[in-house]
Image (cartoon, one colour):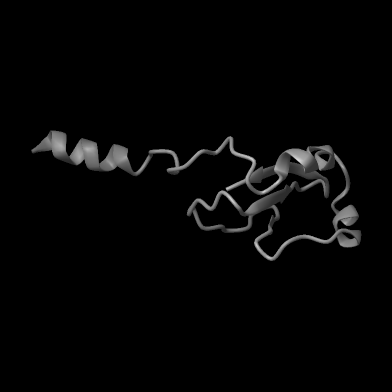
Length: 84
């Protein structure tokens, strides 16, 4: 019975299903944004599925290979650009 509990608990730690290395959203072409000030984003146009994630923002864990995620840090700079 304890093993079942351990398996259930560990299942909650599994990475999201899907290919997190895919570039279906075009993130590779925007990799140059990393390290740039987030104010640069205001002059750019993004598709509707783009998600902007700021410090401390809560986000869902669902995987969408076509969604572009842009993460900004506390320093006001873009920290990460990825699909998911």
